[in-house]
Length: 142
Image (cartoon, rainbow, N blue to C red; front, side, top):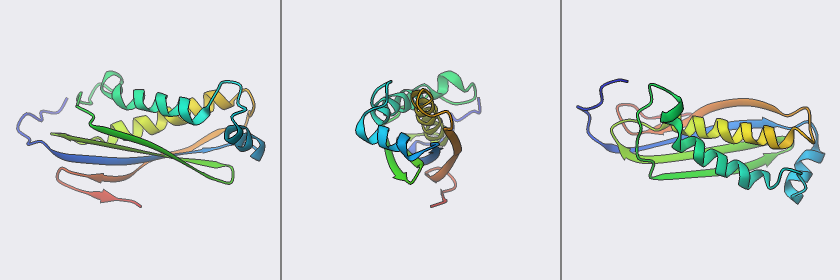
């Protein structure tokens, strides 16, 4: 891991996004109506995403374990695409971009797993960082 012992703690924020495209509007209807055999897709995927954010340092060897002080997972449906936005905040010496992106990817993977029995055409389209603040450079792709 990179030595961060000399750094000061600052407020850090990252927003990551994943896009999941389903194969039919019937899948979207099943999600909205709570008719997916494996359960509530949004609630189960949120729980998985929260675990993903918390476990990032356990799975990615160069990530520092850090105190996560806030995580939000939000969804928006646009036709057959589900947009997942994951916001992570902390006050620490290093950023939370990887934690936000890891959370978004786990949400997307959980959705894929839950939907595959009813839709063989689910695709995870992209996972990207939308915004990062804190540290030396701030970026905003929104």
